[in-house]
Image (cartoon, rainbow, N blue to C red; front, top):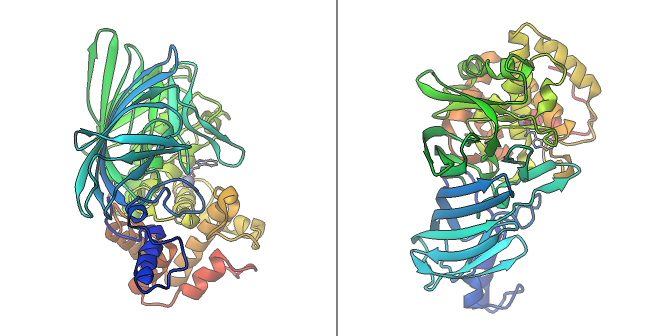
Length: 471
Ligand code: TRP
Ligand code: ZN
């Protein structure tokens, strides 16, 4: 689903090459009409080689998943509705591990092949540019998570009582076939079947629960466009609380092995209050449901802003005290990252700089350190040789992205004043809602809304090699 922002560039080069080929001047691969009709095998994003695909745009994922913690086995049926953005003789999906049993395109059996983490689908008939099509994939197996020293554990991970699926920059392909790049957002309709007595949580609005023959199916619907890395699946023994907040469902879940009156439960209980605080500053909450999930699984060392329902690892609450800073951070991502998403991972400061700044705003409001104190400390501690924009894959979650990014947000605020600053944030979340955007898009919007030239200022704060003086 594409609403705004840029598309991966890989195919553009190929098209130019074909035009050039007609003029007998092509220096790239030999002109080959059949090859041109193959969808690209990745999105062209160097932070996630092989992830994402070209040639189509997904509108919706419909997933029917069964997971049995007794043997960690997942059985899945994915129906993916998409539009071809080029004529296609074949196209790729991302799928890591698992065994494919059948693939159909528009109901007709399709040929398929596995090439590493790619599922290559050759429909019985080629797809015309602009054609809307549906892909059915039946698959099964024991999902294998990806362990990375710099990016944590990602993917579907079996736990003591069930499983959790989450991770950034990618994780979805370990549990369903997907165009695994944030530039292709889509809606999700997910049914998860687990043994009776276990919870199965997902993104979005709860759409029913039914039990039959010892198994319970939990149904979740996310109607706002969602990037694939923001999808989550959490299965296990949880205390699930279902209520409403401002007329929308609020579903929180705390691992049953964590105390009911402990810091994780107390922190998640403030979700509605914190979301309202942020909505007063960023504009209306962008989704149809609220919530949060607190895990006991210690291999998850981070929190993640999974859409409408962030997931929190146990480390945040280990001190015994509530941590509302992390809740404010993950909720701020609902505007910055989830509703307005990256077009490419090198712009990740657009997510983390704003979420970190929101955390500083919330802590000040909640009676903690003032923003001015935090800014002074972070300014003194920053290594200005490390850039916020394009930090490199290994530094996606480094201080240059989070802390330096938040300092840049504060410098913008001090330069344009509170009134223009919050108008900029609201214009961003309104105009780009549900879409994708880049750093250049943000700078252009900030200049337009404030009526000032800001490129040099933001450049100094985001990527300059020396410390700018605090405005
Ligand atoms: N994006 C998450 C946040 O800021 C953090 C995160 C997700 C992360 N995955 C990670 C941090 C892996 C380090 C490693 O809320
Ligand atoms: Zn974050």
